[in-house]
Image 1 (cartoon, rainbow, N blue to C red):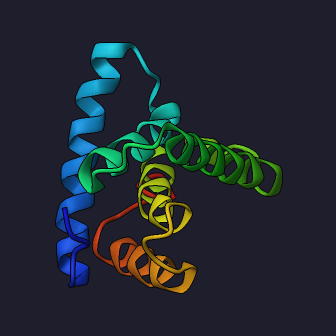
Image 2: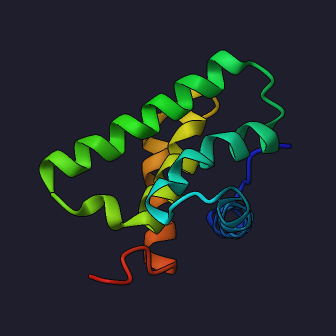
Length: 120
């Protein structure tokens, strides 16, 4: 699948991915604050990435990002929606599909359009 060419298409795609992740999380008994681990798997599926090594790198990057957030802001691991969306978008950078600035711009747009911090 090609990368979305508009921010609104990214928003639509990531919402669909989150919905799918919610279904997987229920089926697999995965806690909401661990759903970010599903995001790289869905990116691999959506982008046709077959390399387990790349998927593992995306998962590792996402886990490190959440852990860093916890160190800086204890309790931030409960921002499960933000962490899922961030993991989904930034997995594209880890896979070499987007540069970091592109990821940040897409994430900023999604954050403005979708309440990623509902408890804030």
